[in-house]
Image (cartoon, rainbow, N blue to C red):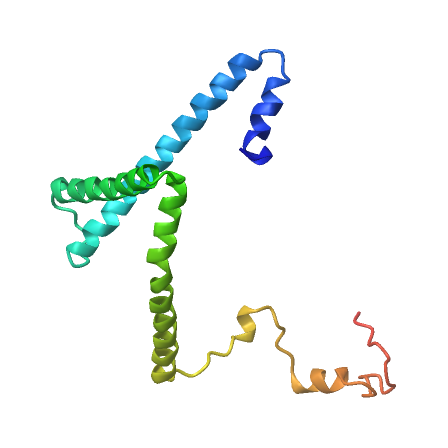
Amino acid sequence: QSPAETALFALLSQLPVAAILITLACALGVAVVAIFFATSADSGSLVVDILTRGGETQVGGWRQRLVWAVLIGAVAATLLAAGTATGENALGALQTASITAGLPFCVVLLLMCVGLIRGLEDEGLPAMTPDPRKHGELQITEEERAARRPGAASPSGQPGAVKNQE
């Protein structure tokens, strides 16, 4: 293990009640990872269920969602078992499979970006200009604008003079 993975436990081992703290940290770590996996599997199975229902978001039955959750878990377990059986790092095999499956999808994403740009160009909507009143710019008259130009005569007749407002 690298030092980054053991840094917390090295820190906890220096404290007076090290055995208790390390046990609590391990239990907390397992609980957090279990909650993460459970919520990820639940949301993943929900998305797959919605996609297979044709985009219908009103989830009718829990059985189909459960089937997808079990299938996703079975695929992950199979990949981990395959990595362990071949003698290589099981997590490494799972990561390799994820990258291998995700690489062709990058091409699909690039094609989707091109399609989005073409679709936006086809719409040809005019660019929106911001309303100055909503963006804090002051509405000034032409006389005030002319008076603010460099070298312009002020209302008192002298360039740069400030009018006393009493």
